[in-house]
Image 1 (tube, rainbow, N blue to C red):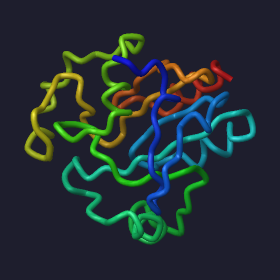
Image 2: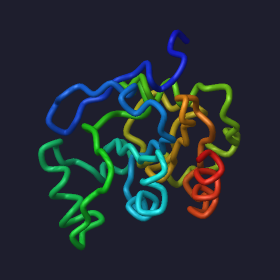
Image 3: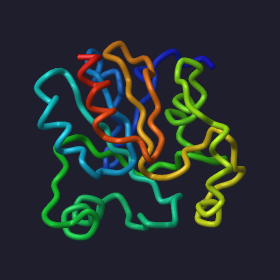
Image 4: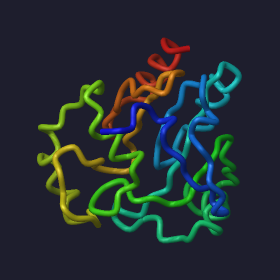
Length: 177
């Protein structure tokens, strides 16, 4: 793969403006597509060259059908709701699996530096009927709660499966900082 780090990619804001991920050079990044508990991570580590990058996705049970300009209001009033306002950048909606997956996620999922128990993928048969992409591959993101931790020099460090305790993510972020 020609791309050597996450800094070789760019993404669009919710308003369609391109943002080179190299603008986050020097920061430890947590790349996610769901927002539960992430403001707490920003409060813990945001002052220490860390940030979360949020990438909405509608490929898991079609749970995120809104368009980009509706995203912040949906987060605030519906999911997670309760006045939630993200303390980190939220980019435009992407596909993280399948034929139209975003190149950043292709890179993250195929990075050989990340250990991940891929063999467990097909043990999640209950989810497969709620997958909205094709083809389904063994290294696909299985559900919204998976995360990728990136070192300050842009290299993938660790991939977290959907049931990984957030305390493990916190520990690894602290280690990288």
